[in-house]
Image (cartoon, rainbow over all chains, first blue to last red; front, top):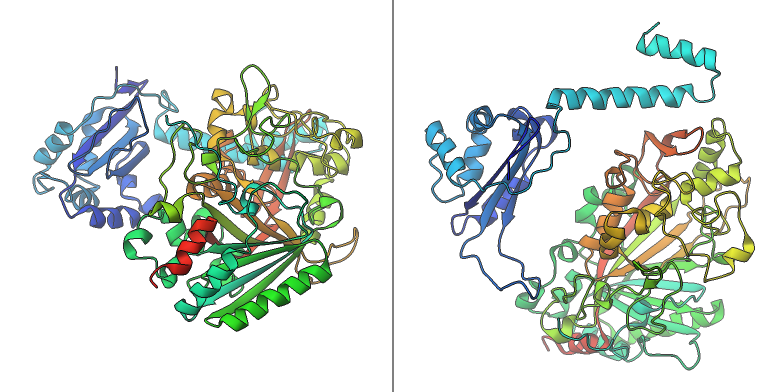
Length: 180
Length: 450
């Protein structure tokens, strides 16, 4: 059981939502901007992360035992470039307002006025990772982004170079990517 | 698991379980102006609906009835019952535009009036064997609406099958439909339903399409309350999809500048079948009419031994729609994303080589499922309008993708070919999510709130 895969880290936080605040929280989450404006863009090294409102347990029939939650929960799960400490600092620092608004709907959130307590809150509500598979365990986010850019560039090149003879293809390749 | 009760065929609407294969269809989109009169009319029509009960002889016409979420409310279904319907259906199709790729030319702001939206409450589908009969039934239907009062016709759509079951891009269609467990022939044709470990195929559990029966997870999915309203019902997706035939042919022409083999093969590689229906996974080199004519062979393939897509490209249209055994766990999860397609083409065919004639043509797409979100929306958003599930990055289906004029698609081969740029070839002109009530539910609706 590990929250590490190569240099990648896993973090799952499950926090109880205050009664009566579930709808507000959903609206908040649904309204979060995406892309560069996403609050997660201010938590550097995030590969993949999401918040999920868990309103109730789904009964899928036997052999599962019926069980019910007294409260709805907010799950936050993230895969990111390790280690954990600076990532928690980012969640409780640069991500600031968004984190405060989101976890502010949960019971016991101390608020970012007190970052140390906020970090402790996330750690206290952390779930142990029982299985972690990372898409790119060895590559940090900037490397992944560079690889995607390169892939795009090679694809564009391939589209343009289709049907060329070996010599003109080699020339075009050197012009685009350099090399002897 | 409770033993599955037998399918209540007399209570289930016919179009849900059976493609009528009648060549003409008319769709009337209705709005309720006076609920009491509308309910009376609905009660009358409930007795005219063709059910899924076995035929002695194939009927030459059929009527089926569907209702929107707004329609349920207007007819008088109480709030407590309305709240038991799922969010996708309640939201309606226009609200799901971003998810579905209904943007740009397909955006709801540009849709035709009267196919979807809050004013559409009911839809009547009238299918017929010939023009005379269909027109006669249409007059009868319109007369009944006039007599009843309380209902207005917002729009009418008319479909007509093209010769040879072709669609407008020129491909024969309708080879592959999931067989439903417990309905008619329980032993599916090879290629229909779910692939079995030992070879062979089994039908898909009825609960994937009809509410009140176990699904592929072995449980009955949530159904709306009360049971008389939800049970034996289903959800219907209706979309009017316009096809740019000139654009499609031009794309093929341009692609032939880089594709080293025949245009016929290129057209097949994009779709996964030759135009006559020959599946590439079985015969990757050329069409074979004798195979197409043989229902035991024309759908019998799995993609399992072609992970790279050298015979049938991974991104080909029919492989995206139903990836069969090419997906993990022997394709087990694919069984959760099947739909029953019941579409019909509209508009005149465009003869080969003709310039743009300005005529509207395409398909009136319909499909039934137990969960719009898990089935239709998933297939549209994840399998057609993205490529990630197939390790194709963000490559989209050539036919249905919301291409922006820069996209590409890959035809694996030696050498591989990249077709680019791609533009949108199919535009959504309108659509809505409907509930397909059982006969008992239609009777219930005719008396609800009264």
